[in-house]
Every structure is written in structure tokens, then in C-alpha cells.
Length: 462
Figure 1 (cartoon, helix red, strand yellow):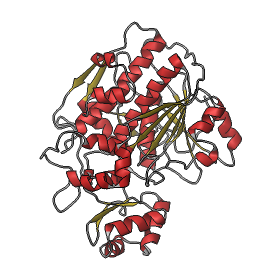
Figure 2 (spheres, helix red, strand yellow):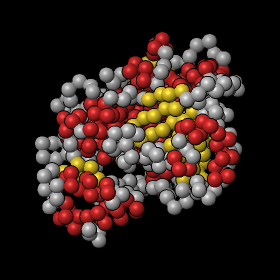
Figure 3 (tube, rainbow, N blue to C red):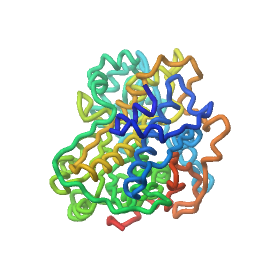
Figure 4 (spheres, helix red, strand yellow):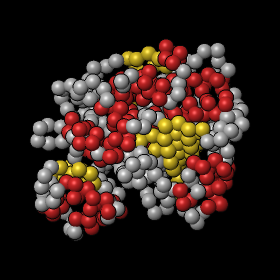
């Protein structure tokens, strides 16, 4: 089931509020064999409803504002990184080594957009560089052999699997056994009284501080949404791990961007944590624990915090500690096989696992804030791209419809994305970008500020 009621239930929402949401359906939005349009609509709808609920509580409204989900806005937002223009130019999003490759017995999907991942991939394959050389080496090896060798070298590659093969895999079974959104209360910390907010524009997260320790797409989409809703969002990256310029610009709206060495600048981080309301992490499970960033360690130092954790494969099972990206999860879980042709894997019309999980993460964080303000307790929420993939595949049998091949230039709903695109000047340049699909009565229409250049802001709260 990919409807709003399921997504809303997954984040702990009151079913009585579902009547506050309406949908504008548009043919041609996010066409796929799997129900991508419906899943995307549900994720955005749950987030908008959670925002309206928290906003109503903080503004003292007698009724939760009406929510409107427009397929056109959703489809455009789910392609936001493709719609972004910087001074009229589209940023490069995928490098030549990030793609599907034929192997001796099938296909493998690699991800090498970052220099360190590229180096590890080439090292695992024993080649200096070059697409032709990589293709030649991979054609002589099995997909599973490549998957394990590249992973052992710290790189990123997964074998293409059918849905049945993923269901039989130990990680696939572990993922399927978990809820779509894992929600936990760690302690009995007293509820925090959130200050009231004005009714128009209604900013449910106004005055709240969000520490953003995420990268690439799903996590930054979630925190970008919280910034839209009024939160002071500070993204923190390691000094030696710059984000891709295009992705940073696309997901940086409303935020500030700082660099911080979590080991050397521990005192600075502790000052940030001491005043944070939400901490969002998007690194592989356990990667940040050595810095005291496990939920339990955070709760000891900042009781009443909302901790939101995002991963590719889930923090459990044999792949619990592995890195991953949307494209890799599509390949491993059977989605690329479903969406492809008989002799070639395909892809969803957007990085829908990233975007969908991002909006669900924001929805769960907003609901956790609502629950914490009413009942107290440090709250932990966990989501995984692979679990969102399982939800997408759990729908009815795939449609025999046109599938989107990897690299497609699909541009949005049938009537075009123009109504949901706008422009602004920034320190990065003149930006064309997608508006947020989150819409409710008296809610914000756009972000309060354009993105900052990566790492250009001070590591402190406003």
C-alpha cells in the first residue's frame, strides 16, 4: 500500500487528520512500472500533514490547516537536482565510473562520484583509470565477485538482483522485517514547552535548531524541508570531505554550511549540541559513534533531543555497516530489474528512494517534536533507503508501462515543470531551482535564504 494513510501511520500520525489532506492528480508525473507517483505523493503528504499538525499546536489553532499535495509540485521536487541551474548551467551529477556495467554473468552497479570512492573502485579492480579498462576487467568477473571485492576495498558496487533474489538475501529479509519508520523513546525526560509561533506565515519549526550531519540527498532533503518550515539548520561537514557543488546547492536552501573536525573541534560541537533540538545523521550506521554521536550518548548529554538516523541498508543484518546510495539500492533490491528491459537494467524516473525517504524523515522528525512537546522523552527515528524500496515494491504487480532508462532526461508532469520552478540570486550564482512541494494553509511558499557556498559559515547557532 503506497497511499498517504500508510505513510502517515508509519510516522505515528492520528488517522483522524487524514481528512485535512487533498490531492491534485496529474497524469505523466513520475511514470514507472512501480507506483512511484503514489509513493512520492504519500511521502510529501505525510510531511505536509506533520508540519501542519505541529504548526497548529504551536499557533494555538483550533483546527489543523488544510494540506494540498500537487503531483506536479511533487514530481518537480523529486527531480530537483536535475532542474537546478547555476548561472544557466546544469551541474554534473554522475561521473563516468558511476553506472551499470556488464559482467561475465550479469550486471553490476558502481558509484564513484567522490574522489575517494573512485580511487577505491579502481584499486579493487586493479586498473589505473579509464572507462574502457574498467569495462574490460568487469566483463571477465562475476557480479558478486566484483561486489565483494569493491566493498572490501572500501568502494561502492552492488550486483544487479531480481526482487526474488533480494528477498532470499539475508539483508533483504532483515530489511523486510522492519517497520518503514522505526520510532523509539529512550527515556522519561520532561516535555519541552515550545514557544508559540505566529499564524501567518505558519512556521512549525520556527526557533528550533537542527544539526545536520548528512550528505548527498536523502538527509539533506529532510533538513532542507525543516529549514523551509522555519528551523535554524546548520549543516556540518568534515573539512576534507567537500560535497558535490550541484547537490550542495540544490539541498542547501534555507541552511547554513560549516566545516568541523569532530575530533579536533570537539568543544565547538558540544556547544552546538547543547542548544540543538534535532540531530540528523546520514552516515553509515556506527560511523559517528566514536565521536559520541550514538543516540544513547547524545541523549545523555542533551536529554529530550530528537535524533533522526538515515542509512542505505539499515543498521542491522550483514550489510548493516555498508555505505550505499539510491542507485545502488535500486540495483540490489530488484527495482532496476523491474524497471529495465529484458537485456538491460533500468531506473526509477527520479532518485525517488532518496527524495521519498527524505520527506518521510522530515515527517517523522516533526511528529517526534510534537510527541516530545506533549509526552517528553528523547526520541529516536530510523529510516533506510532499502526499507523505502521494499515499501515501493510491496504494491500491486508492476504495470507494463514505459520504464525510464538510466540517464533519462524526463522533465516532470505532462504539462511541464515550469509552474514549480523559480529563480534567485545567491553567493553561488543565479539559481534556477524547484520549489518545495510542502503546502498547507498559511504555510511558507519558499525558503528564507538561498544556499551558502560549502563550508562558508561559522559553526554556531544564529
